[in-house]
Amino acid sequence: MMHKNAIIVNNLTFTYAGAKNPSLKEINLEIKEGEFVLITGPTGAGKSTLIKCSTGLIPNVIEGEMKGEVWVRGLSTKEHTMYELARIIGAVFDDPDSQLFGATVEDTVAFGPENLNLSVDEINERVGWALKVTRLEELRHKPAFDLSGGQKQAVVIASALAMRPEILILDEPTSQLDPIGTQMVFSSLADLHKMGITIILVEQKVERIAPIADRLILMDEGRIILDGDLRNIIQSSFDLLKKYDVKLSISEIFYEIRKKLRAAFKIPLTVDEGASLIKDLIEGGTNWEEPL
Image 1 (cartoon, rainbow, N blue to C red):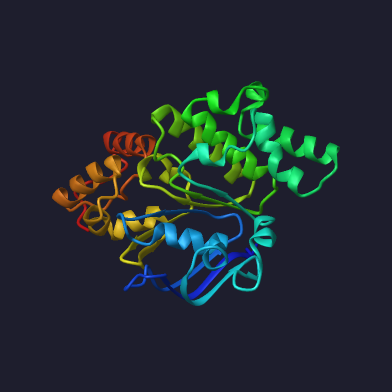
Image 2: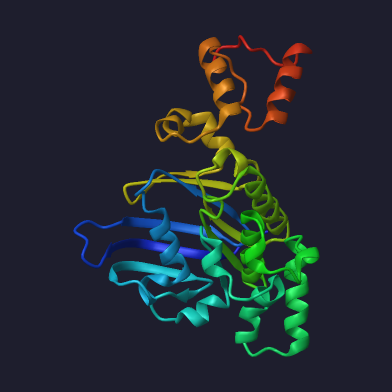
């Protein structure tokens, strides 16, 4: 089945007002409906700027010189308002406290739908659904600002979902979270991916989220350096991932083994895949000494 394009970026270059050099340089990108796209790269690579262009913050709110086009489900971000784009895109950023707009969890999640002038029944249905898929039902009446960091970020995700977006875009949502909070957010994203929601995630914790992502985009100096299925990338471009300090511990262990032995096996991505490969070796199903 052919997928529709959720986002198309065509020859995009952007320079912030007052800046000498562009933060994005001739970006071309197509993101398919239902894809889970993981974007990573060093500080200053242009990741957050690409997110701002994809949500419509650029050029609707943030000033600068934008060349090229961005289409979100066929709508040009140059020609449509943030209000129009917000009906399609849900955005989550790294500071959950700045996105909590109600006294309780329920109030926060209901804020967006209430501003769409929906009926009370429709608002209640959306809030209930969003709390269920983010596993926050038991916290419905809790004060939002009393929650843990991971719980707060889950509330922000629920708030975005209550708007019924077709696309969910997240810019380093776990940067301030501990491992438990990070896992809570990533588990919610895995569930949403299974539901068919298009997810675009900027994240440095690649190892934690890579197994459920469909695609990895590596950026540097305003350009896309790598773009493709991560399992294919680790077979052919692992040296480049190491150069950019993309952490994939299990893959790196087997990459070094494969390089040392000049073996032909595929580099695993997860602990389970690595264990399966070792089991296959023990049982004689894999020839580690077969030349590449």
